[in-house]
Image (tube, rainbow, N blue to C red; front, side, top):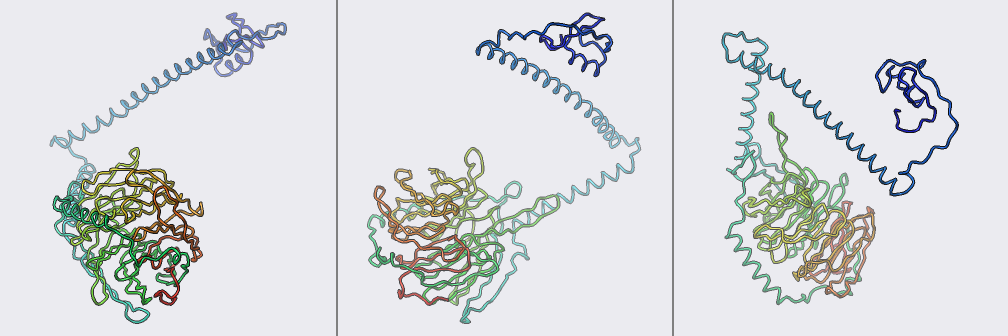
Length: 568
């Protein structure tokens, strides 16, 4: 019997007398033409059907109960696994035999070639000799290219130091001019494979950061709400004062924003690759900074020294023979002057993916950049030198690009948001990740520390979460007004009294304690028509709120007649 079951149409072989199932033995004879048991030749003429009475098949004993059926299934599974194991062993043996069969002629050919090269009595084939010369020449060119690459990383090439100047006129004829020179520190130390080596944050810098922290912490204990701060009833009456078209119509969109409080100058970074400095009291553009080749993802004022920082998604790079394309994403440091001009003081190329955030330390001597390449860099502002570049393995070894970053007001803590919905808190002195906050959905788009030093607000696709840094836990969440629109920006005012949130609309909350309610004071609709407010920032003493959206206009909300320029 072939199937091991009672045959439904039994037949018997004349030659061997064996009993078979008719359909199975017919198929076997058609395929092989012999008996499946004895191996002797067998035809259909040798098969004789057997007449039997119609009977009901008895149910096997093992199939009469659930435990019996489970045992039967187990036996069938064991048999299947044993068969699979045998097949794997056969496959492994076949692979070894194939590998040996392929390797042996290659080994013979290599041995023959070596004999030709080492034995002068053997005549070398002209084609083989030509191939050897070509390989030697290509290796030489490769080594020369690598040497040139290492040399170009160590010094400034003349072509890179050529200044690109441009002058443009304001609507009132007084727009400042700017020039941007591509600069890099000379005699950089390079490690293996041409990677830059960093000196690290020195003990002297750590002492400076610690002293700054102690001074600011002491001041914070005596901190009081400024008497000039806009009251709640004033914020409730805020309306749009002006809308200023600062960026190009061909590539609309404002994706970053910052305010210089002492000068009341607003900076915007646009999709059109430009950063615009706008004097709010006069309603005039101070200057337009060009030089990036892609959108300006982050802008930041340095309150001392008339410096300005921009981060972008643009790339600079070059390729050499036998070497991959080497690309760097740029951060630019701009130096302002009394005549309104801004010069590009440094172009920094330490990141390999889009720079998402730039944040300045409270000393105004150092700053940090965060990038999608899963690193953040700590820079000396005056020299433009990257002192350290910190990377993290991420969750379960997966790389997590940084999408936002901000210094704590005291300067010894750095907060970063990742593309994997994590918030990471870093000790700046040791560059150690000391805390992680999870719970968001989507990339963490913005981070803002309260001036009281206790609260941290983070924004992502699911809305805003508030964290208590003393207990390292989330104590309140605000959902986005539109589930399809991520929350793109969050900002505490300088006094720590109000919180602004930008998403499908703009909302202002009154800051309260951990247990008290944070009331929504005011909701502004997104007047851009794009349904997406990308950035929001309080002005000095919360006297106005600046908003950027995915059109080209900067909008200012405040009280009518409160030192507001006319709409342009």
